[in-house]
Amino acid sequence: MHADFQPSPAADAYRDFFDACTDDESELPEPGGRYPAEYFDDAMWTVVDNAGAKHGISLPAIHWSDGEIAWRWRDGDDM
Image (cartoon, one colour):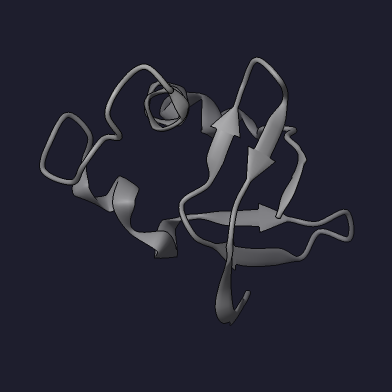
């Protein structure tokens, strides 16, 4: 799935991580490296739809410069 990305203020804390995950010139980050292990835990990530409902997703690909997000749904994990 993909959509326009409108980050909450809390997303700013993860911007460096999201940039690293979408940098085509570098290797993908891995647990145990530069970022905390919990960043790689799918349970941490959600999207909120226009009605305000949260939906669990797998690790998102955030493209800050384009204002886009891409993700996969977590099976049966609506919140």
